[in-house]
Image (cartoon, rainbow over all chains, first blue to last red; front, top):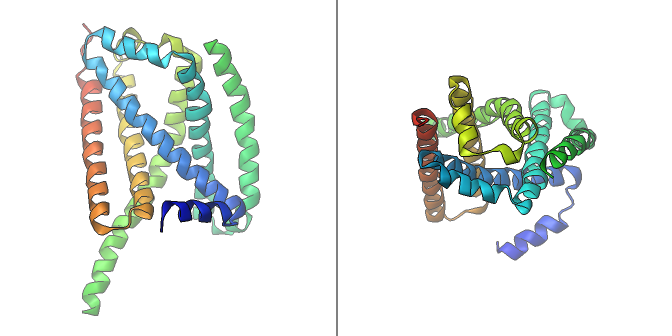
Length: 127
Length: 125
């Protein structure tokens, strides 16, 4: 299956909430994983003289990185965490499977209740 | 013949089952630790405060070193196992799949060894 057919199927397959939840879980998972690779390599530079780590830190303190850390990393990690909790609820309590779609909407509300105020505090702390 | 193939099926089944269980156990650990780590660094300390000196100060405490070590191991293994599942979905050709898995394994070993080394062996000078 070519990549284009794959993307076409992903867009036109009408899996509703479950499919969107799964796609976001996968995208945020891979995203956080890639950040983690960069993060570990970056922390490893602690082994070198201090200016190495600090010059990298200057990059992390730039505005685009700061915004990405909230609207990319924190957004993705929090979504992945909450969706993972929903997946586990359905795994260990099969009766909840019938309600996975409403559970997902509840999850999104919880997400907003946590993300909006904490992201606001983070933004205030940064700028 | 049938018994042999059945036992082979069960062997891989057990590995897959262990990976499934590991994903959930590590998820519960990361749910607390990874979110705490991110929120603590961003809100309690603030991103601008992060520097060589701050990390060196934190690592004076064995507790923070242990925290970082647990986060490194569980975080990376959870992610690597997840990526293995994702790769299996998209990389179908047997040779390509072997290469992809080998690469993932090499990167996993490298990053865990390097990460653990710096957390354990770091000497504040």
